[in-house]
Length: 477
Image (cartoon, rainbow, N blue to C red):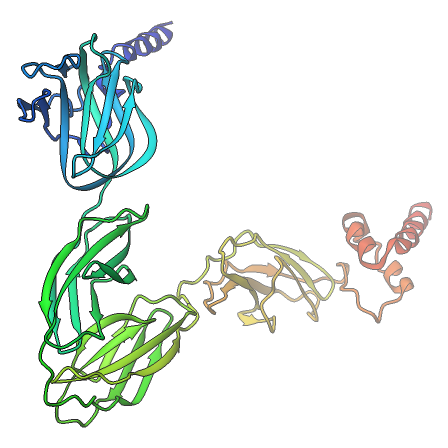
């Protein structure tokens, strides 16, 4: 009775837990950030952190949209970068609420009226390039206490630290990407026109430019919903045409070695006295912009995959070679982790033989099993099943049997615990083509009772009737 009363009290006590534990949404973009408070005037009247403190017992009250400049009509937050929003959460005193989303240029992107006021996360159609989110009353009558407000999505952060290096006909750009799981591509524009759409990288060379010409480049971070960040911009002027416009020679004697996840290259640089460095591309993506050594290791590749590499030589005047191209296929992945040891070995002694069973391993790359008789492997190739017949033994002699597991990489497990095998004259024989029905019938007297199902399925149902007749004779004699 005391136990039941305790459980009842404990259950009732959960009803009185603070509500903010139920409505907590700490994974959003506003958590812990102060919101500005304002009216129809353009100047903020102050700020509050009571709307984003994860506590529904506190909040901020806004008045109906009355048109007056001296009352608090809304609370809002302004992002520093373009932001994508795909869900909202509002805990308020009334369902008469309104959430508005604005772009950087002041354009109203979306209005949501009378959303849930219970604090639940409500998915919305994705809104991109948001600068301001604002909460107010949705009419001119009701005040609205905003207890908690949160939005969910991600900030479309731009690239940073954009730098350039020029030649007379090219510009090499480099930058740092934002840390964001939604980043999908890099877009580069030259004088407002897109010239490259790249997988995620942090450098690119724009070629085919004119000497002594001004250009403006913009680098955008593109996200998985196709939204673009604000651009990082840089203005450059290409160099004058050098006196030397002859391209250097190509690399030579390229050799390489591959593993499942990488490749190492070795080559001879051209003998040109003005040779400067090598640019290396993988699948037409620049991976090394100024490599001066004659070896290079590329890592973190995918096993059993084809890659196309190009090595472009560059001289001190910025002239580029056409490039040396090499196709590489990474090796099939092999591991060095052995499978687990087979367990639960079971053995039935037969005549001149033994019948072995064990539990199946669960490794995904399991190839099969090896069977060891007195420490020597008995099978010639891996056994795929979990049973095995050991034959050509001597009756009344004791043998030890153990099993190992092997995987597709050739790793072999530790041998299982050995069990004893002792064939005997009255044990079940291993059937072969050389036996006839009379031999089998005469050999069943001592083992038929326990093992007749195996025999019946081994030689056919007709043999079962012969064996039955033999047993009948034994009983009646």
